[in-house]
Image (tube, rainbow, N blue to C red):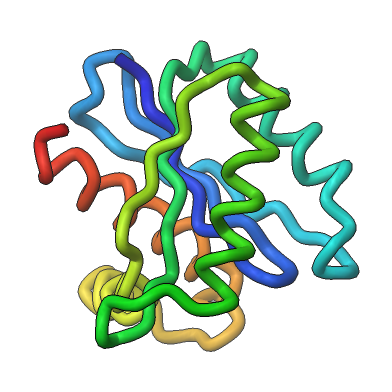
Length: 140
C-alpha cells in the first residue's frame, strides 16, 4: 500500500511518500503558498502527486499541544484533512506530529546539512517523512 505523508503548515505543506510496499519513505517536495487560506493550488498539486504515484492513504500530521490537547493549529489541520479527503476520495489518517520538526533538524544534523538555507528548504519535507514513519511504526 502506498502512503502520502503531509506536514501541513500556515504557508507550506511538506510532502513525503512511501514505495508500493509501504516500507521505504522518500521526501517529495514542499508546496508553498503566499497566504494561509490560499489552498486551491496546494490541493491541486497534492492531487497530481496522488494520481501520478497511485497513493492509497494520506497521513496528515496533527499538531497537538505538548500536553496532548488540540488547539487552533490542530483544528486547521483537521479541516484541511477533511477537504483533502473530500477532494481525493482517499482516507486521511492523522498522526501526532509533536517534535517532528525537531527530529527533522536532528536528521539533517546527522546528514551533515549545516547551511541554514539548505535546512530551511528541506525541513518541511523531512518532517513529512518523520510523520509518515511514525505512523507506519505504529503498525495501523
